[in-house]
Image (tube, rainbow, N blue to C red):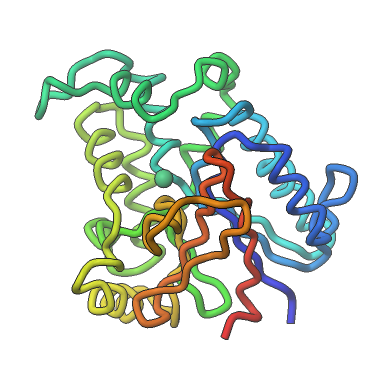
Length: 261
Ligand SMILES: [Mn+2]
């Protein structure tokens, strides 16, 4: 069986991503070396780090290269992509439902990087606004955020992705703000009813385990971020958090999904 991998929340740390993919044999000299492997990026390419556009470009490049050897690279949409695109589209325009907020206020408050905005080209915009929000592979349900809000878009993976892609084409601030709000919620599988919520999502969308980023594992586990942190398996083994908190000095956590037990 082909190997299946996932990595999340790179937040502009292209060098660390390249080192991690290279160590795993998926990258060699900056190019796809994973053969028939499948690699999933779970979103949050930008903000908080030095080279968000570089991370997007690497994902785009690998997505193009991998199929030449029978491999596949898939990339999900994270809330920081909504945030950066919302900033680019709407900037300081107050949110109609709550005028204290704007994309600019939230972008600045959540590690927005001016240089990423300046380097955004149409080809990046086209790629970003066509990303799926949810994936399914090796009996895992792949999400960016630890939220059940995905189910507000639909009850099948394809329906959710179609609905999100349609909203990414909509020109109104209210729609974009609601997308940002949904994808920014968290802790759905860590709360008292977390096992129940994870079970409901897996029953609805398929898979035996959720893999997500978005919320740094140390926040789920308790304690602080260290470079040795491992992905956090919780909710009775129904959820695996692979956000190592790279921008706080944590590791780039690349996990192999086809070998998880
Ligand atoms: Mn996130």
